[in-house]
Length: 121
Image (cartoon, helix red, strand yellow):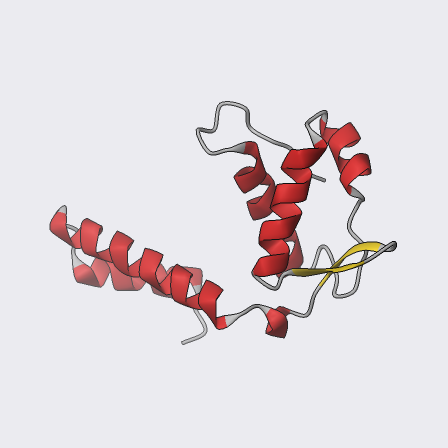
């Protein structure tokens, strides 16, 4: 279900957070579905439980999961993902777009890439 890349320069908790976020967004982990406990996942991935806890904390702050004391962590409603995360992603997109333009990328090529990713429009 989850694999980590130890050659990735990002911290393990960030990789784990990203993988869990993608699983929730894709529906692979459904709304209200219980996530593995910190101990279960730490054992499965052979990493420190504090790393799992940090990833869960970040996901909870962003609204992707919620915790029930004594019960565990669960996937939240996607509508619960706060506007802050959307704003953060828009800022990243704007920064990438700007850098690509500064590197000489054609705006029409960038627009067609967006249409490739989301062809509904």
